[in-house]
Image (cartoon, rainbow, N blue to C red; front, side):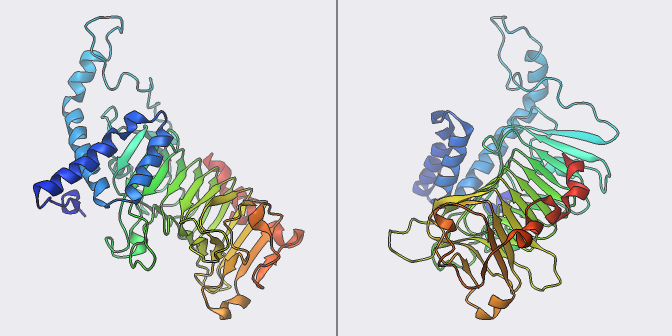
Length: 414
């Protein structure tokens, strides 16, 4: 879908004025925060409670400014970059602070592509960099993405394996879009980033969907931040921001280390075989008053459909917190499999812990296990009957990267 088709044309001056005020508030917000993390949080909070046109407006303005930089960048850079900074007549270039000697030279095994929203690299858009990667290359291509918020929808096709997205910190570099199930012809297509290629890596970058948080009963408001449908994918120090269906862990073997994952309903879902280690899982569901038993969130919704499928989610040494009253998981498909081990759970976890998707016939086939967890939410006294307190033998297959055959492929990606 073209950007132009997403931009809503104001029907009146008052509407135009209102939207411009929104744009100015968001565009100027960064001046009032001392860290990129504060600004990203502001962007998420603001966009979640406002019309989804906001990211579209920002995209149109961002692209205009990028085109300006691209037109003037070459002569501007040549004129100013090599001057001595003690020259009183020197005008500082936007690229003067760019890391020196980057990108490093290509090797026989690794190529580098640089993305910078200000025009200091060959590319200003992440998708353009992905498009430039050779088809079915056996070498790894590292797409180095400078600090900034990149308003675009990114797709990594099956024909582009062995790509790395290297950000500058999950509070400093983010790819952002605002599709929903309604706007993209289905939840699976709504991801801001969609990865179908094998051996994908992301480091120190955030993936965000800033569509408004769904209200109770909303239909088609699911909004995915990233869909991971390629095998042997790994994420280090990444952020995943959304509400309903934030992280679509679709299929394949995946590894998550030191990641921040935020959402409200089923915010880690899919049929992947994935290992989450030292990750922070944060619910943003509405607070529930003390004593009220309403459930308004679920962390996982695993989609294992048969006993023959070797898939499941394992969470080890993670933390679960935030707001709302939530389940650890619900059985999206009859053989759903999720394990939490050595994980700290706050009191947002409902005492029953799990849900069978209101289908008691699934109670005999789902596998929901907990092992040596701690915190107020880990009390298993009132857990549903099908929840399992795992012993050492039962837990062993889920406690390290052997669960995803990581000993065969993960070390080659570090």
